[in-house]
Image (cartoon, rainbow, N blue to C red; front, top):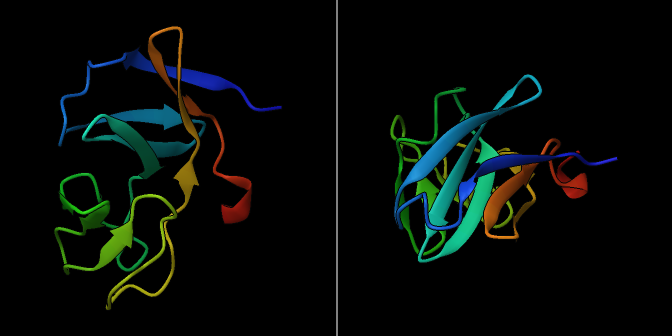
Length: 109
């Protein structure tokens, strides 16, 4: 059964910013993109480099190491040198609190 991890009050992550948290043994980056929240494992699938420091544009994040781009919705690698997706995590706002599931989306599993 999915457990939900509290990230913080809705609005506590500024648009264009992120927050890091632990979901089991996985560091997860939670992003606010124009009031929509996305969560993915905080590792580029190309070189296992933290993705959270990357640039966000048009619902994509660019890895700060080698400029690989990933879709924030699906984690799909959109440009080389990355080929593999980054696992994404369900995010919800429940009673004014941003929450992330403790495990990746089933399609990522």
